[in-house]
Image 1: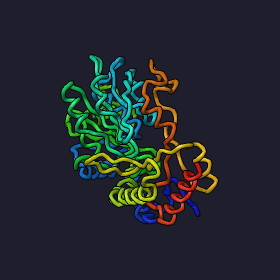
Image 2: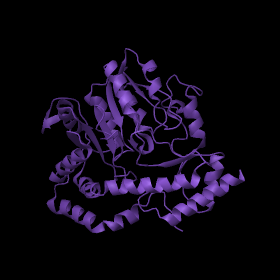
Image 3: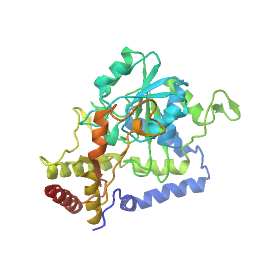
Image 4: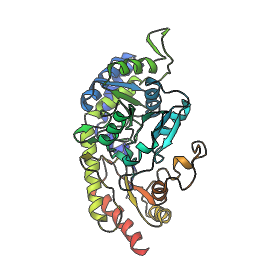
Length: 366
């Protein structure tokens, strides 16, 4: 049985003609940078998310950096975020000379513990950056309330959550700015690096568009500090095709997760979904005993698995700042026993049954 962590090849095969035609269209036009397809894709994403503006950029990492540049983050400013996430969240804060202020996670959702945010706010705090980890929306109503009380901006790190929603509103359309990654393995994935920044604020949108094109509105006239982070036309064309299928893709992941949940009910710690959330399972993660040995056992059975973020950011040499082991006990517990199983649009019932049986076989012996 050939089981993939993410089966991009079979996903592509189902829409091959559409994808190939879209790529050919860009090649024939020779409009490779900021071609009309980029604008079309941006409009379609904005319509899908229900926000006013969607601005393409080169990657999800760039989206985070540009978002902070747009709100004027400067050296010494503090950004509240989580220590349990991909490094890009903190990396981009550090690149701007700002300081990440970590808040421990909720043990059920793995997202930032919203009840611990307010105690970390200081006169230097400029923004809150929640991460919708694994496709699970953070508790945005509470986060927005705290932000409003303290006059803070909210930047959603929605890199893993395209298609997710919270209380009827799509993730990346709730905060002041949303940041999206279209890395190939994402629920909506390109054929290379690509990203997007979303907002409902006209002024912010205008500034973001300038930043991603060297700080200019008009070629060779540079009004503000910018970067080169344009979404290229071929990636936009591919994503524009796949966008039509995003709800189908998310539904397939949700269905697979539901089947896993039934197999593991009462035996293992399965993902928890907060009230009002549509969790789109970019990852399906369990918490188990003897995690590393389980991963070795699954590998022997031909089953891939992943341990995402085994070292939390406050214990990473580059981003520990003044933190130390023991400062975020929930995060430190979770990173020791969490493991992600295959989940994707092409996962079959036979594969789910086989993966589940082997996970339970290992668990019964320990």
